Length: 135
Image 1: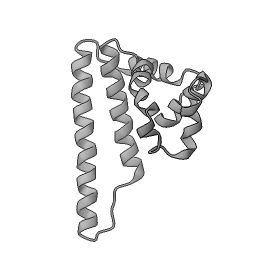
Image 2 (image 1 turned 90 degrees about the horizontal axis):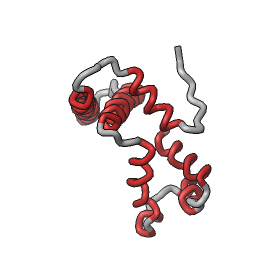
Image 3 (image 1 turned 180 degrees about the vertical axis):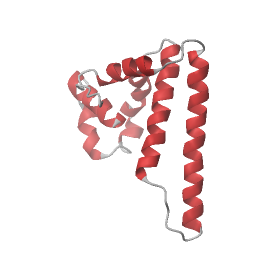
């Protein structure tokens, strides 16, 4: 069964789904942190394998799907960890994204995203921008 999120509160919905799909009842933060370390290790292993195959002139067997799967798992464990610390993913993204508004970083952003940043007074545009960054 594939769950479709409506996108209005995509981040909040995702947080809720992460919390609901975690079957661990005790030591959830420790579980999330260890899972996060493990998934980052898996991503590094995939990256190393890809570099080796390319260096040896082999056709790489690494697929985009493998990388996406590891990144999705990392996002799940990261979200679980911050949830256990009583942080909200929305707030964390909001606070840490403020660096994007600094002039020295605006020039490094792809032009297609600039309208979302420059029109930061529009909550809809800002939410769309954050959702696009996540996707």
